Image 1 (cartoon, one colour):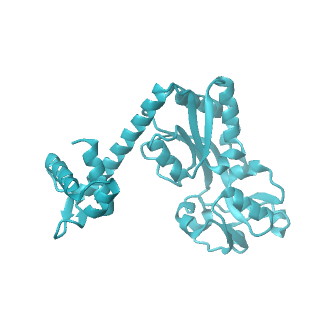
Image 2: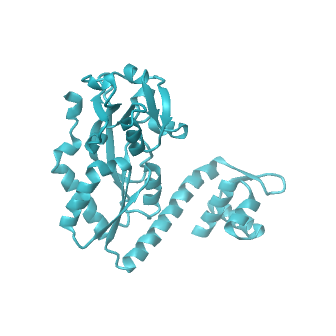
Image 3: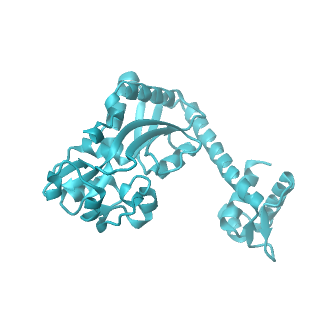
Length: 308
């Protein structure tokens, strides 16, 4: 068995059709079929159920199990190749991806601190969604990521919480609600509300207390990015529930208030993630420097807004 057989199987398993898989792999169908047969003979199990004519297929239970591991093996192979090439080129850089809320405070502070520790190492920054970051890390395209906890699987990755804040209400400054010391979930649900588009709602449920408590807000606008949500709130188009890190933006036209009935208490976390294998010197230095800086900066993990 070699990586070629795995690639062939993954293509067929994803297409569920030998013809489409062969076209995707830019090869003829008979050699592809023979490759899968060799793989099955090596493993001693049938990976595919072949329909009459042998073109359309379905995946056996053994095939489903093997597919997950084959994808991971191929991803690791790509990662190893990328890291080897970077090492051969003498790359002294670190590729850091992040979600938008990391820009409010923690990422700029980490980069400034790292430049003091390693001034000759270049930091390349890439804004990506949490899911895009995990895929990029596993594929070796990125070195370190900063994601929102609970919005993507972190399986196979090392992780460290680098900022923790309560979930807060973002209220237009001109609304009467903004004059209160705090708000309830019921009050927020009764106001014009800004939330992520439908396709992001399952992800948002991990950090959105309204959905967790069964409230159905009056949706007046949808926005996928936190920065966009805050801009709309500042324009008076609606309120929202956002990560407490947004308080660091100091944007005009917005009042951030604690939510008094969060049960259980919900906090938002930014998590630094990385792939432990194939650790470069620059990557190891960045992770170590970030850990030391977070440990020396207690306010990054302080949830005093909830208590105040």
